[in-house]
Image (cartoon, helix red, strand yellow):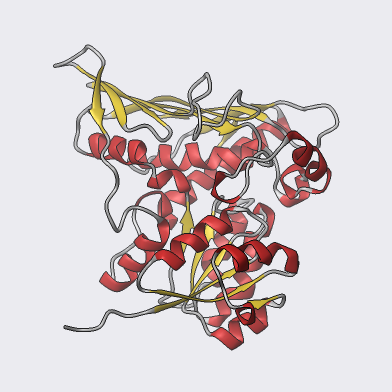
Length: 359
């Protein structure tokens, strides 16, 4: 029996706390060797060293030293939203495949720069964690199978109590911790790509594009709040006009509860309306609610637990690399780029206080 390849993986830049989750996914994969982690702030490496029992000699404060000494084949990047382009340009010349935590980028121009920086034959994957939620995956299967006909509208409500109320693994933080971290957090700095719109709109716009079969809207109208004392929004509402109808994407930092513990009201997730029915898909639910012309009364359809290689982004990336298959769905550059176009248009709409047409 042929021995399966072992993939050398490194994690670089711990700005986003999702790095801890991604590293756990990597180290739990039987074909992955976590060869190194790097961050300019050594204190941010300590939780990973401790919880993953990683030898200290595999941790670095200089990403270049990490790459040169460990020679990974895949690098996981979790920089602040406004730094995705800069970090891809730094790391891509080392000839690695890249898994970049959402959002795609802070702008469409930056997203295209990231694509252009990749070496020939190397993959760039944008991870959208909601892609690996069974309810949303089941919704796509039903949509793609024609269960509700042609998609006409997508409604999305996404958010949580706020980005500082939880850390890696969704570990809860206290109000005192949130108050202490908030003044220095990149999540609340405009220059670093903070705000609920950039944090969460990409989810709705990108998975919405997936459900829409890759369609682009014609124009976008967006409104965001202006919280006193903050330079970024905590609530936004975006309306996208498509040739076949309107879709709405709402982002919120400050929901009453976090959806992974107790669904708030409004519920976080998607509602998809088609020519032949509707689907409601709540974040983390074990079933979706469906109506069809043949069965108009709302009924539950099970959303089974996902099987490999669709349980997490590390599994899926390795599967595509080994099978020499293209990345598909929200994590692909094609779908993610349309999502980024919607985000860009929404940001311009908020700034200009008017409707913006897509190019």
